[in-house]
Length: 127
Image 1 (cartoon, helix red, strand yellow):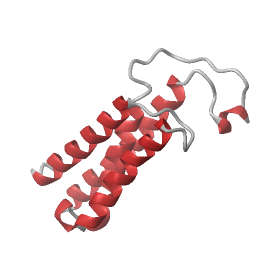
Image 2: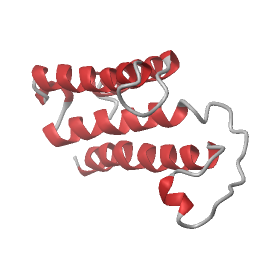
Image 3: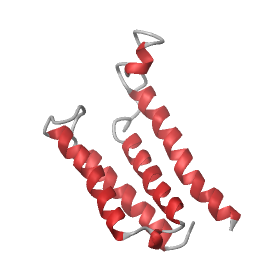
Image 4: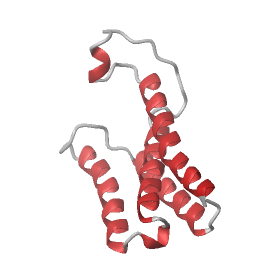
């Protein structure tokens, strides 16, 4: 039982940290808190550095919900729908210019992949 808890925690923490590292390393311009430390930035040309962090963060978020409710089937259906709608709505609001960011269909695809990957992992009881 403890190993499942550690695995679930790992699916929250590891994608969160990895996504953040890829996001920060792959950006051409520093984000706000980085400007406190330096004005210019050396970047790498990481393929997918624009959408891989979104996928990883979404995996982390869904895994956090699974961990909080102690299983996929325990998450109330309303919460699943609300989270799914919120995640996708942020991308739509970016596309429409209502919030800062770049609305992108690839990000929407990554969100769907993250949802289905976490769903499949937990429904199949692989973790």
